[in-house]
Image 1 (cartoon, one colour):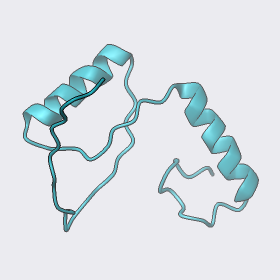
Image 2 (cartoon, helix red, strand yellow; image 1 turned 60 degrees about the horizontal axis):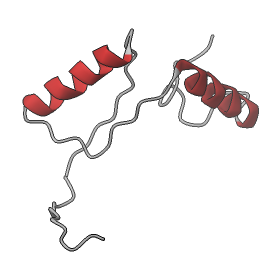
Image 3 (spheres, one colour; image 1 turned 45 degrees about the vertical axis):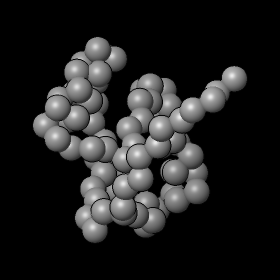
Image 4 (cartoon, rainbow, N blue to C red; image 1 turned 30 degrees about the vertical axis):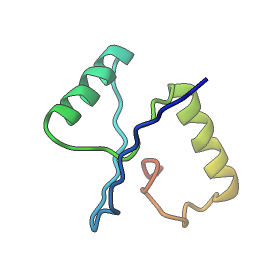
Length: 80
């Protein structure tokens, strides 16, 4: 049973950015996250996706957007 919870309220940032990065291992990704936080950046969200998940997401995007006109280059590299 939870009897106490601590929460932190933060405002919505005026600026935000997103990025996709590939790492050779989960350990390398974990070290990168630690460095991001150590540098004082407070990420709102971080996701760890296997290569297979990224490949599936690309296939789904290609299925629904075969001409690549919806947000080109925003989530996945532009295919030539």
